Length: 446
Ligand code: NDP
Ligand code: 2IT
Image (cartoon, rainbow, N blue to C red):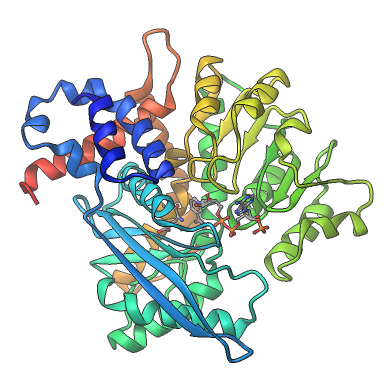
């Protein structure tokens, strides 16, 4: 494989898909030398088959809003690769959603799911529908209209969706309900379901908690104690909130959180009372962080800003969205003494930022390793559904810890450099790739 040629070809065949190109470039750059040690891969053009999604469903969703107007959105499901298990990955509802973003997410998901040690292929879906400001009934009608089209392409052993940005327990409930009605079956076709209808304990917490467990594994390689460390977090949704909750429980300080309109800085760390308020405000009341200083004037709110340049931290955990931390932000973090970056979001750091982190030899975990606890626990939900059993929270949490440790071990095995530095980007990409590649080789040209 010649990375430059493969990339140039993909760019000319699929122009105007920058996020997809970015994700593919990062993986190909990491795996090139390993790939080239396997001429059998090249003989069956494995790399091109792995980079292009197996198929993409793309459709219009029409629904009626509360004023009786007909509204139209574009919607998608990208089934990227099912070499090691059924297609699996979340659904994103956000105004920015387009084919490029979903193709990058489905591509990343394939390697992430491979790392989890479980049998799951990669997929992602979504729509440019924005749940912001919509009533509960509008959300329900949209979810039903989306599934009215998608239901025939998914299934417990075919393709299992879950949540992502803008899709949480409420949306999964509505989508699963409509799926069940259309398919006339009660199976584990969605994960992130409510506890009364097949959901798993700890799934809501799993991405954030898993990221903290991964971070603990990384810190242990350098004998660093997390207690008292200053942790900058971005986002204040599912992933960010449960990350912050666990960070506080571990005795470290959360010095920032953010949403799409601005960020909160807590120079001395959020108190439990302040964090609980933010958690409720964002989770149950669907409020804005700008409201937080009304109740806690001692906190700083910065409209339209991201946290990275505003506060010194030892650890950064970007947990909002892709490309939310750029090269200048990385410079600011490194100048402020940051020793570790563990990504809750998918591809939150730009290539320039990643280059700076790795160049500075800090602990840097890409999202496909650090945030894999969410989909791993989805895999545990699927296992419970198949057995028609529910495991206790302690059991799921213990399995999650073991999985994050196993992901960390794979990164160390494939990512340790001659100078001893663990390059988690290379480790995650090579480990994720090798399992999928071996399965694809065994199954022939499909
Ligand atoms: P949520 O919708 O629960 O929260 C998203 C958060 O990010 C919100 O605080 C939101 O702000 C903010 N945000 C969203 N888009 C932007 C943007 N364009 N600019 C700035 N801030 C933004 O989503 P999740 O917490 O589930 O997802 C966060 C990230 O984690 C995503 O990258 C997702 O792909 C990834 N992820 C999620 C997993 C999961 O299990 N949910 C698993 C693994 C990764 P606001 O409140 O203003 O909308
Ligand atoms: O990006 C992700 O890993 C997720 N949004 C979770 C996917 C899942 O199937 O649980």
